[in-house]
Each structure stands twice: as C-alpha cells, then as structure tokens.
Length: 166
Image (cartoon, rainbow, N blue to C red; front, side):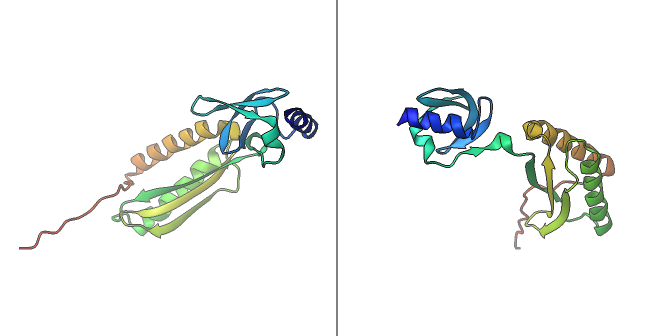
C-alpha cells in the first residue's frame, strides 16, 4: 500500500520537498519524500512522519502553490477619534498598503464596526510571494504604528468603565 501510495505521489506530484503542505491535520514543510513515508517539519519544530498509503485517498493542501497569502486584521481606534481623523486614518492605511512593493493592488480598508471598546477598521491585503508573509506583515504593522503615532491617532484596547452609585 505504501509503495502504491509512493507511485501515486511521484506520478501526480501534488507537492515536492521544501513545499509547505497540510495533510491529515498536520501543516509543515516537506523535508523528505521516501518510498514508504513523507516527513514534515511542523512550524513548532516537530517531525511528523505520514505513511504514503494514508495520503493517497486524502486531501493534500499545498500552501506553497498559492500565488499570494491573505492578511485580514482589525485596527481599533478610540471612540474620541473624530470622523475626519477616522477618514484620514483609513486613507493613511491605504497609502501604506499601496506603497509596499509586496502587497497586491486589491487591498481593502473599511470602517467595519462600532466595537465594544473601539471604532474598528478592517484591513485586508494579499502578500506576494507568500513565503515573505510574516516579514511583510511585520513591516506594515511597524509603519502603521509609526504613522498613527506621528498623527496622534490613538489605538484602542479593551476597557471597561465602572460607575459607583452614591
């Protein structure tokens, strides 16, 4: 069964060594593909060995094959933010995304919600290539923080106001 699985994997080539895949609930980088097993190094650093026979009838998601990786996050501004400041902050976010060479042009910034503790802006963008996702997100986050600090726009955090009766 493992040999048949190996032949199927080698013939179909749904992935190769160094690809990041998800199989049987495990996500990691393919470090070895042998006649009997496939070995993945997970992001936590563990080695997972999966018999090839188990992979033949299962869905394999090859994350390395995608052309871009999506970021979808929320930025909260304090409720004392004026509507003009809110509009300016949204435009600043669009400018930051437009200026980054590894962000696709189909990004979106929207005023999404009146949250419990914040005016919530949704930020969605695609990173190309997907292998640089974490570096690009970090660069953009630092740039956002610097711009918001320079403009005096205050990011919100969960808070609660308690009233004491007399």
